[in-house]
Image (cartoon, rainbow, N blue to C red; front, side, top):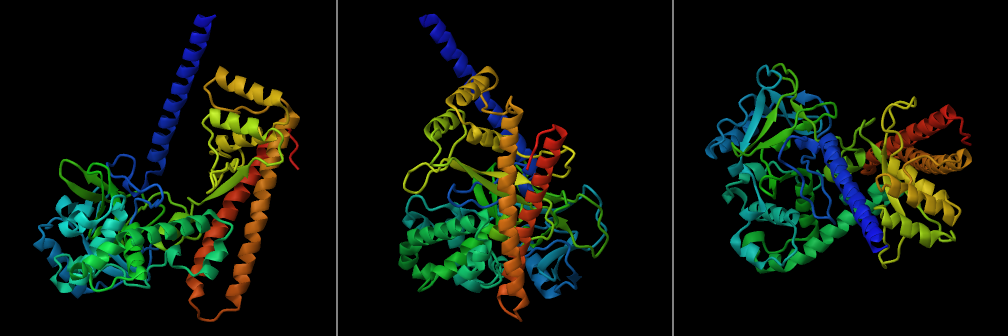
Length: 500
């Protein structure tokens, strides 16, 4: 009996290990697909603090393929002269700094071929947290993030002005008021996004910045010779947001870095050119993914990023962003008599639920879905984890939960990944999901109408940029939800399952 029990426990352990290994492989594959600006093959990744999630991308001066005007020769020559003085002779021989309708950009000074390296920036030119003055580093309390340390670097160099050896680069950073990240929005503006995950993430980011400022304030006050007599929260937030939009996580160096000159690249969601880090040459590089003629704007991809990330990190959005996504929240009812059993089952099969601030279990979680490109079934459709969670929600007897657990143990440990054996039960699951999607669509459609009505009553006000961005975010989420709803209807009509 003990031997059999030991074999069962060992078998369970093996299944759990296989499950964990499969999850690791899935995460690795997802990183390859989503990759960010650095791509799956690069050695550069974002290394954010868990409470201050920022993307691995940088620049807030971008909208895709904007109108390019004549290059400001004086600015370009000063910047290039500075690069040469730092030993960066080979950094940008085919590019020059110009201005687009949305800020600085780069365009080709000659024809560029596919596969040609168009930018190289050495490790020496990268700004990392260890470049902070030793006096400041010694005073900083434990737990101050690399994001905050880079923000302090910016503040210190801004105070030094022309005496800073980074002055040509620091002058190119956006001045106060030029960043349109949602962390700078007023409450009334942010309320336009109240139904979206971006609203929550913005509030969280603002709280993180406030907490970081409180941590470094004593250091700022002790070092007026480095930072000036008084550094306000607003100035720190500007520097912090600048870092969030420009910091690169370099995995090979295990650090964040600001990479001068790369800041001028604009984003194109259809572009596949990425910024990579070459460990052997100790430099960051950009390779062209297509041909450019002289005078063309040269762009890169910041990654497959939805408008919610673009708005929070960079302060811009794209209409019809192909990488938009929406968070769908699903939760167990507190009136469900099987709530405790369901929670135990979910937790036992690596399906976590979110805790409230007071430590109580919400019984729910958010699931990210992206646009379903084809209702005929091609593409990812509704995430398996979301469908599995819905099946657990719809279980009405302890026997159903026991059968789910047994089925999971029989296979790979993943819970409720197969359709319910009863057609009527699976129809109930799909009805639950469809009702949830339609509710979210109606909610966002009403918000979009309210924004549209508000804009019609405006003349020239500061609300217009934020209203436009909010509309892009909401429209993208509606498009994703509608595609998911259509996919559900098609899948279930094909399987002869009635979906109301």
